[in-house]
Image 1 (cartoon, rainbow, N blue to C red):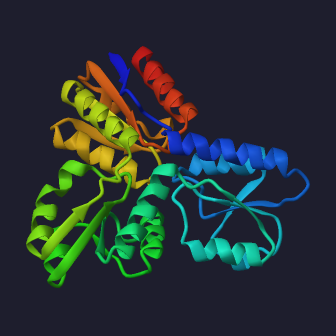
Image 2 (cartoon, one colour):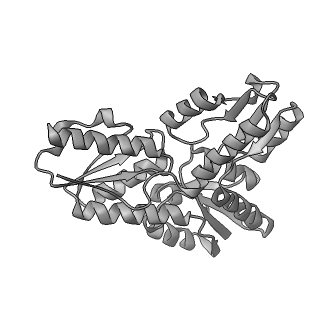
Length: 283
């Protein structure tokens, strides 16, 4: 049995940058803690647990839980008013928002300023999308599927941005229907290039592999999309968080096992999956 890892698997630039900023914050603000993130800094439970254990950085769900310390803004970004509230509460703020997410936020605001009705193509409940809505003045429509487009009113000027981890190819028909709903449409492709490369690599490997293991947090939308991309090729594909979840029965008859990993999956998790597969192959 051969094991192959897809190119660009695991941490993207924005996630690596976020962790680098966490380490810098803990180092430069030593003695000014505690250290918090508003929500998990990335969608990977093992990585979040590692930050707690090794760096003393804890996720919180609300600013009301703290009144001092250092707040690190998660890679997905937050509504701007939350940063203002944190500063007014006396917290030091370190902004680890992914630059690609910041671009989506700024394009949404720019479209509003130009008089467009903003439409975001992405997941309604995702924290990144919630932040983009706030930057659009709270008046954006979020579209996940064709049914959502049907429910929209007729609009004169529509401005479109994407959640950064979406798959562009899945929105062709949606964009066509949006155009029919409007007199004018302006589209900003705010999908992260690294994510697109990751998706392409996973698809290419899945077409050759007998089995695909897609590694990442269950709460990671990016990882779930990789799973669907792999399954769309006809390949057998399973979503796992850690090596312990691998079922040896999956490997029966598999000559090539491919590994894809979401943008928030740490290297040590991927390496653990590879080692587990090697152990199972020897047994």
